[in-house]
Image (tube, rainbow, N blue to C red):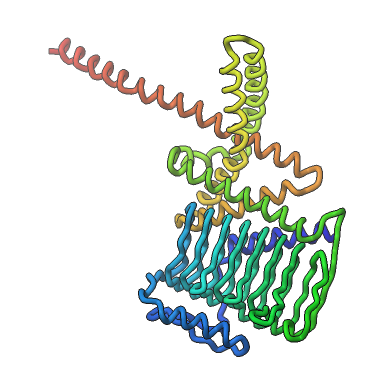
Length: 415
């Protein structure tokens, strides 16, 4: 029961990370567009708030202002703008030094928030390693390792699922933590502090007093089939994150290398076309496997055999992403949306739904296999129709010349 619950929580929070674009009003500080200064109205951790204000006000250069939501897809991302809207960051290494008058969604490998970073609403972050030094209203974090320094402060709630969580920051209200290794800094020089309640599960219970947690402390240790809830959720979250990243990489490569393929993908998503694609994909696997293995038993054809098998593995690896892209373009064609960010969000939703279907016991394996075969069939169909269309284009000028010459001959005869 708990295992199924963990899957549902991971899926819902992932969907929230990807598709949420709604901005809610809060009673927390706001960032002014003119100066970028932070005005605090929350009592409590004045040392942390005032310290961050000082570093912000002493900034020599005014950051660039971006009105509206900001979407960034890149390997290395430097978010140093003042954004009057929400921010969506997808990359490998992400560094946030700017300010956001909304929520920030970060998905990457290494995500860092500097002292100057300030998020008016909520931070949603999924990453391998997260280093948090800035401030926000709420935090939802999934990570292998999360370091929250003394300079960080969450005005309301903190919710963290991590393998290792080093907490030295402040929380204005309640903290909810699930971590195998939960290190709550309790030294006198720079102690971590939770003004509300702390609910946590970890491999060991911590010795905390009211000077560190002003509310109640709830500790629970839950182990399921040799794995903690944290490790189960992290495993699924990392899996869906990898799936999303891979699908976006394939999509961006198609935009760059094969834009015509994207324009035709929606035509492959129909009852007859999908069945045909599945059959072609299954047949391609059988034929390529037989041919590749047969070539390996010959002396001359060994390199070619390896090439055939390698090509088959490559196409199978991107087949599920291709099916997701095809469904996305079919939905785009049906609902008629033209904005790029809607395409990205739709693709993310489709990828997550397909990933979630694969989690269904027994049936999930069959569904994943069918989707993969459909994607492979779409690729093969496009390659063959592309070659045939090229031949038709090459033959068309010849027939036109023949028609023109025949017309000239008839005119000469008439004269």
